Image 1 (cartoon, rainbow, N blue to C red):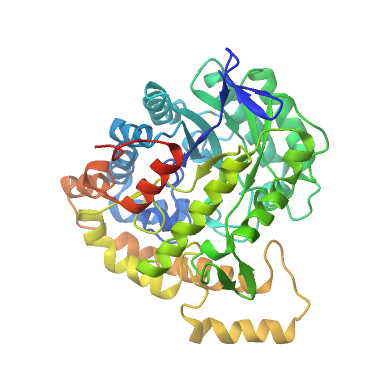
Image 2: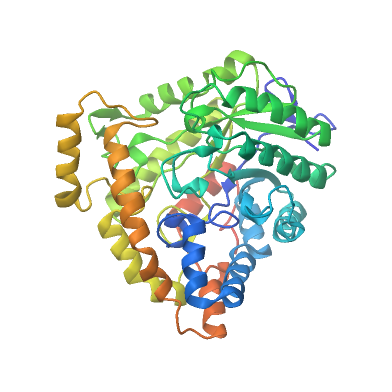
Length: 461
């Protein structure tokens, strides 16, 4: 079992361990750009249940959980030389809104399975609560159907998360291949006044249930602001996220300008130094919980994106920082591998429509459907020049409300209708499209990571 010792993580025998791996996004926390649906997970699931019925929808979603990650996937990651997978989970697998504080034991079934598969390959897991009741941030990846992070406004939601983490910590307290717990992904507390006291309370509760596992704590404002921590906690890693501006879907050239801001290697270093300053000042381990560029399909632009990643990995190596690349598997935007077969054949045109409308923030260039949204941007900038809504300002807020919420939710019935009329074997084939055997490998990315991690040969062969 790992523990924090100064600036390093160590095993019980004293050996230093630098955790380097990937995030398993889109598995126990579904995200629109990863699995191809619109809007947020719970809204999508409701639409699919309406089309298929409760039992047949459960058949599809359970098979997706089974197929998305198997021992073949664990073998691929081990072959790359990775030793860590950060596993995002949605609270809904473990608790229902209509029965709060009642833990759903079935939720542990798939999580146990994957943690054990990874452990058998010598790979640690970091359990990441990515979606909290009430939503801890303003975006789809916390399963938020709105732009309001209600988690910070209601003690009830906070009580439920403390209770859930007591159950999770008790369940995994003796598991040696669980590196630790990442209890709140990317908190977005607009006031900055609730998150600190909540962490104080949560840490005490988790430590009472499990005094040994490492805590991985994100800073406020999507893991960029660490001023909220009022005290240092023992056996804790403070997690920064480090997405490069030029690596976003709307990023410019590299080196080059993105929306008026220059980005090159020296800027990447300066940004990382700023985002990790709290960890270096407090003498705690450096671990980047999320980072990684978005790929475009344009060979020249993607070569620049690979260079961004290569430079970031070099910078992390120079600072002895661990990392978790976002993300392992998807439908073609960012993953090491991506789905093919029946799912892509059936939903490909729909995914293209989402892309044309810019309905997914993570895959959006912020220019799609500009003939519609552009005048709204101009209106807001003209009429409300001083408006700076949390967290990223007026332009992002307008896009969130119009494209990533309104248009995305309007797309839900169209997505769900593509399930209607399919028999059970066809539903299973859709889910099995995410099994590694049928996936396409992004080989330049795999080769880059294997080289960085010191693996030899072609990983997973």
